[in-house]
Image (cartoon, rainbow, N blue to C red; front, side):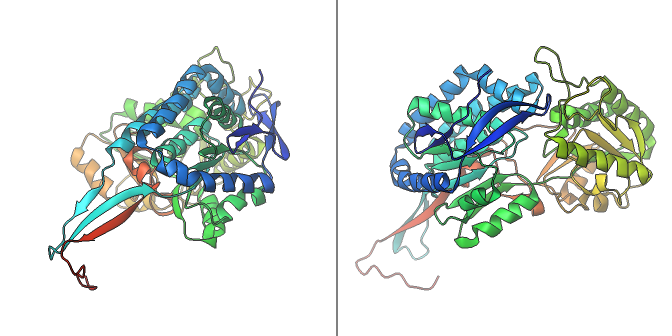
Length: 486
């Protein structure tokens, strides 16, 4: 299969100045050698976006919608190819690639409609001497840094609101998973999207990538990635005042109370934890289980781990694929081994599946008796590892759940007592509290607090990340003077 290998800059597909091999983590084989951007390529992209901004900002909403729907139609027409890109660059199970592709379709649709709902509005004047309007306008050029765990979904969360708002966007996919993003660049070129409106290129040079955030051209810098990366981008972006929208790290707690529906809780914990090999920012990381139901719940989770199918086969119903690379494998294995050495019980998994000799696979793993001092507790695992922490009373439950440096994204509660659920939801310092279920969609705000991010993806809140408000005031009397003091 031939994958997309060219970068998309200034309305055209072109070869960048560098080369990067893309490795399928399931087979450890090179699936494509893509071209990557150098300093001159980045500067050309920045100047192209700068030139495009006045024209794209002035383009009518109807015409922006037309371009978005043309791109959407091409995404639909190329479903299998786009999903194949994700399948091979991540080793992601075939069924799970549907979400990546679908989110791109849905995002282009949703934001094409949502931008038409943004309305300018009036502000009353206390003295009655002036009329005031608040007007929404595009913020300016946007730069998006994408994570590798959902290559098309992450791209979808940025390209939809940026195009709708009238902001030219430069997209830098992860160096690990560029080919699905490059394929979107091919589709932009195919429909003849105006120059500079969307530009897509990868680079494996951090210095080159830093050129984007360090430039004074972008007005919006957005990221899906780690807290550490977010801090770095904000430091390099301090050359000018910029707006930031960042979805960063998570260390999601789950609290399973004694009155919980244990089948439901086990299904959700393992479903989110073993899907995508646990490489999900909202993946349950620390599972606090009431002592009264600990044994029963543990048995259910272990059974799910044993039943999970691990591998890389487009025709099979695979639960868990590989982690992204050898470095990730070694980090996760190290967390598991250190936890066991410190007293945790390994109930299942913990190493490479015996039937797979190649690929960066870790078998679905369950650890019991995890404590607060262990790395697997303190860090976001980003792998298929369930860490169980028993609790006999609720005295320190909120303190423990909130005790994580990179927390603040998602927390889960399982209880039949609505009052208890609301009590804990109010105290947990997370941007999303999921009670007796889990739900994500393009119309639902997704964002963290604290070290887990700034702003939101999805919903109309994401659209506002790319819009600024201007006040237009008109005097109603002949003097035009209404006073300088509020």
